Image 1 (cartoon, one colour):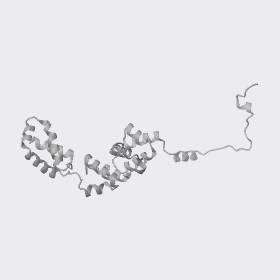
Image 2 (cartoon, helix red, strand yellow):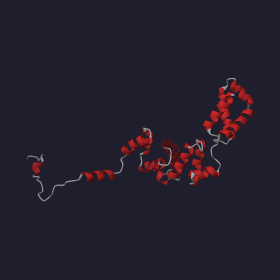
Image 3 (tube, rainbow, N blue to C red):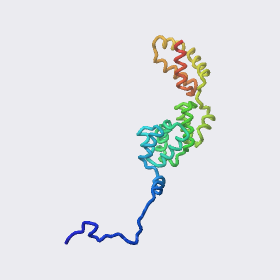
Image 4 (cartoon, rainbow, N blue to C red):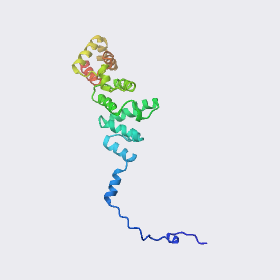
Length: 216
């Protein structure tokens, strides 16, 4: 018995009652626009628009809720720094609690405020970690925490110079050792500034002022 191999073997023929189907290009374009953005396309956009590297983009498009959260944060803060803190501290916290980002105790808005506080120099990265922990437990916004607990970074050059001068006077023997070639003592002076300021001294400004004063 001969097998059927082609369409004509099945006696297919056009239905005379069906009208030709013509789809306008405008409709096709509208349908394309209504489709959700696919992960690969979103990854490309994150790399181009937000300046992320491939790893960061891959992580942040891995789930719809994660990419949504990130985009909300990125609209209000530094995009690269936001990605770093999300992939690091935020994800670690979510993993520890066994929850997903949709029920994060820190809203995207508050997280963006924390990122901007770091970026602006209002707080250091070390202090930001403390603020982050308080945010997780309290749900408060970072501005309120920073103000209420006096965690704002000390960034006034004149105030810092006075503080550093006092430290150098108290440690004149080590200043002499530094000037005689023991440059590793620079870390000691930085540590003393941080200890005296309660970790609030702006690290970059501290280094600049220390270098200037130790040259004199």
